[in-house]
Amino acid sequence: MTRLRLAILISGRGSNMEALLRAAADPAFPAEPVLVVSNRPEAAGLHFAEAAGVAALSIDHKTYGKDREAFEFHVDSTLRGAGVEIIALAGFMRVLTPWFVKRWDGRMINIHPSLLPKYKGLDTHQRAIDAGDTEAGCTVHWVSAGVDEGEIIAQARVPILPGDTAETLAARTLPAEHRLYPEALAAACRQISQRDKKT
Ligand code: GRF
Image 1 (cartoon, rainbow, N blue to C red):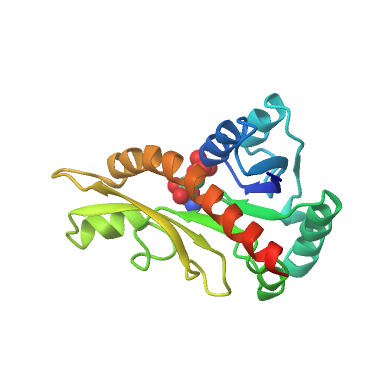
Image 2 (image 1 turned 135 degrees about the vertical axis):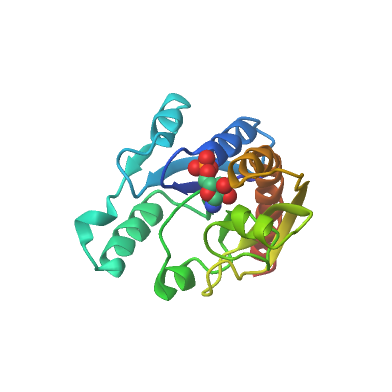
């Protein structure tokens, strides 16, 4: 089995990145992490990646001001230079331009803390509570031009309990994210490998 060369893009804590790196420590996992990139130099996740022996670097979006494409051009050339074949966004808090999304079409996935198509964007847990929902969850999906709109790969559900706040619901959802993301990444790798075989 060939393992796809994986880059993980983060902005902060990086607990989902950590879950992916732990899963990929198994040589049978279909992705091999080669690079972690953060758009914020202070992201805590960078330290975990380095300690795990994975190359980790920051490309500070602030350096580029409003020039999103210049920032993304740097990210793109860094990823291509590392021979990356699949990108997992893990708490990466930058909206990507259509240019970047197209460059990585069918090779980039994201985890979102809601049961898409419900609650795209931010404040997902509070919005689910405010709507009176009885369940919440998380979704891994392919990244497409519309934010949080790409085809769904996998979802996990958690209950919303009486008295939940956005914080308690987030704390219940996060472990479900950590279980779901490695499985969904493995499924995405299998899809890419099958597609590549045919072409
Ligand atoms: C997660 O809830 C993820 O679903 C969302 O941002 C959060 C990132 O957390 N996109 P972490 O950085 O992976 O710990």
